[in-house]
Length: 184
Image (cartoon, rainbow, N blue to C red):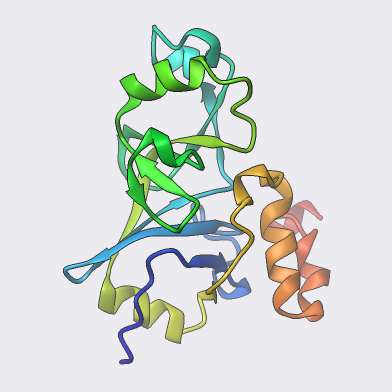
């Protein structure tokens, strides 16, 4: 194996996992690649809950959508943001991840707009490095090495379509297909 460093890369679910109950049509930002483990968050899977339903003191963030970051530790909340001065783990030069929700509630309450600057997640995705490399080799995932770091400003429901077509126009026929083909 070539043991790529996956931190800061994007995984785009390929058609080979089309119909998977969790990962079909997902776009995952890989957050960490350390000690044989790779973690990330799904960028395009909004949960049914808003911040106000999960955190009592969410103030002006009450109506902010929370995303399903992945099937691991779904009770834990994280946030990805583009404000370097708010701290967190640097994922890229312009994107940071933090679990300090109390600070986020204060910091983001005092900013003019969080749209395109922050996204909250419940849970994360995780693999051993070998497991992810095997899934990539089998074609389950397409990898984007460099991407528009304003990705939080993209429309989540259009993100997978946009990225899958960017690999090859032949994917365009699948971009609008329902997850369950019998619903077509």
